[in-house]
Length: 235
Length: 111
Image 1 (cartoon, each protein chain N blue to C red):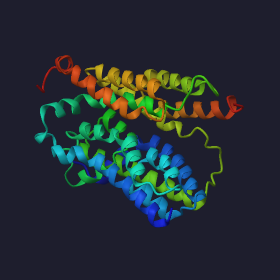
Image 2 (image 1 turned 180 degrees about the vertical axis):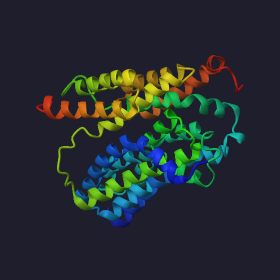
Image 3 (image 1 turned 90 degrees about the vertical axis):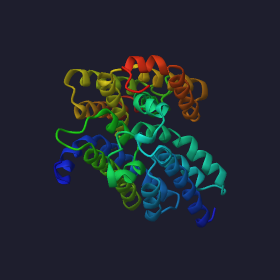
Image 4 (image 1 turned 30 degrees about the vertical axis):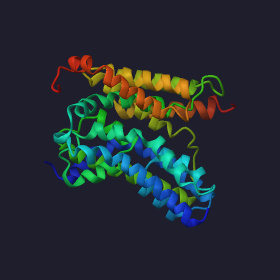
């Protein structure tokens, strides 16, 4: 196993798209917090403790109206239920992560997940080294961006509109990489069909839970054919 | 809301999110203890989740209003082209992002 420093050098380039996207979005988030009267302490608390971008943005509304603990609970569940599915996906890859494991689980964002799932660890690195650095760097980009936005209040010397598209681009490229690499493509079709169907039926704000449900239902229904296609290491 | 109430609201968000993240690992403690069905899901879910993520990050794009989703569609086409051609992740993502920025800042900025 090479040193952790070498691992950092080899892992860093893979996080560049996230660096771009998280810094821009994190800055915007810090500015929004400040506008609502929440200073740098809150930026650290939310971005560092919660580390869930979409929920943090949606929850801004919740933080400035009447106290609604049940609403907070439901919102967090609705927006983040997909993390249950990430966890199930990473049970095996994270198995040998040792002391890093709790952090890897805590810091698994959409973007980190999509990198870890679609990119084989760089030549010579132990998987856990790659997992650790990608997770930690992505985490620091988000926390750093939020804190900076909160302190500097949106002072960026050039037009950043559209820069957050780096994250969409990352998902598209992960999709293409996975499409090329995966022996069985049916799961990708299941995900795409479920998501698009539920988006059309329920709309952008409410499609996540039904989409996850539909994915699960299809996986139950198609278990035999899928296992057969995948060549059966699991009964 | 008082500051204390905001604090509790955020704590609830943190607790629920952390629970969702840790639950699979707490329940199945590593794949050695997981039932066959969970292992089966773990093996095939990533593909489905990556597809879901692509839709998720485009969920607010509407083909009916504004720029009709054209900047997104064109940039994604460029990403697919670049990635098929050179297969360089950073080039594909960088190219797609710059294309999107130029489109929304210079071409579709009136909408």
